[in-house]
Amino acid sequence: MALPHATVQTPVFMPVGTQATVKSVPQHLLEELGARIILGNTYHLYLRPGHELIRRMGGLHRFMSWNRALLTDSGGFQVFSLSDLRKVTEEGVKFRSHLDGSSHFFSPEHSIDVQIALGADIIMAFDECTEHPADFARARQSLDLTLRWAKRSRDHFQAHRQERPWDDEAGNGEFAGRTQSLFGIVQGGMFPELRREAAQRLVEMDFPGYAIGGLSVGEPRALTREMIEATLPHLPADKPRYVMGVGYPEEIVEYAALGVDMMDCVLPTRAARHGLIFTSEGRLNIKNRRFAEDQEPLDPECRCMVCARYSRAYLRHLFVTQEVLGAVLNTLHNLAFYLDTMESVRDAIELGALPALLARVRARSAGGEG
Image: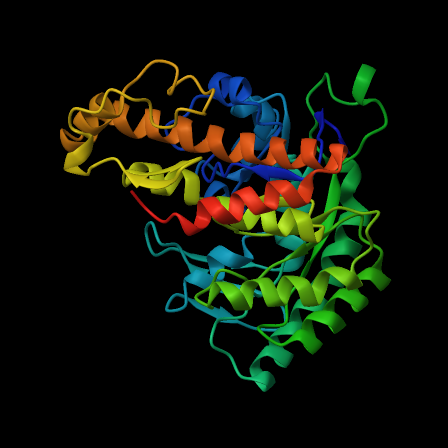
């Protein structure tokens, strides 16, 4: 996948950097871990420090000193989560800031303007994330609105895309001719027929890539997979297919095997801050007393900088004493595990060994938590 700031091999896992930072991890360590693309959050960056400030600073890449690829979401999911602070109309969403209660309005056009100012390599059409549970009529209404907003997002982007604030280096040398891309988002609740229709109508709008949104909103994980399986066949295989907000390590392998090209999730960083570690032997809770004198690394098979140096006993000590370093090291390991997992998927696809990898991952998943 050729983007203005990087060439990204797919399938890819994208760490989430909500407020221009992947929590507790500096950018040079993200580079060492092998991250080629990370996410920024339009809603949060719009509220602070503000998209116009970031535009004046030369765009989000320069502001956060990240020279690889970025994706920004549209703000739709965050506005969806403000159920008590928002009002949805045909024109857009009026909402109150969770920070100070101030009033704001996001339309498809304004979301695109904010994302153009931020300057990410990939930006997202403004959508309404359908809540779960939702009946068919509600999902139908929400989907129709999202499709109308998708067209408005696309039309506005095509009219204003020349305003993108690339860094001086972008568009030259290796990355010459590459431009910012707008992806459409498939909604439709938990109804396969609506997902199918949404995919087909978005494809008619001819986006350069497509996301499957509205998942991981409280539905059973089996239903998440069902919606992905119902949608993927109706999205072009020669364009990036992105599932938003998933999942556990075994799930990202399964979804990649289905044909998903891009995934993101806050789970590796959020779980790390609560002491939940992902390993080749399954999940472990580093706070457990049985690790108090364990001199082994978090994962004997892991090649990350944390496993090369620190013991489970030390990491448990950091967690129990609430030292910030514990969250940093746990996060570094979990991100390394996710990124290495996806690298293994890419290698297995190239070698024709994906079924064997799937079998190992499923066996590991059955092992449970330590």
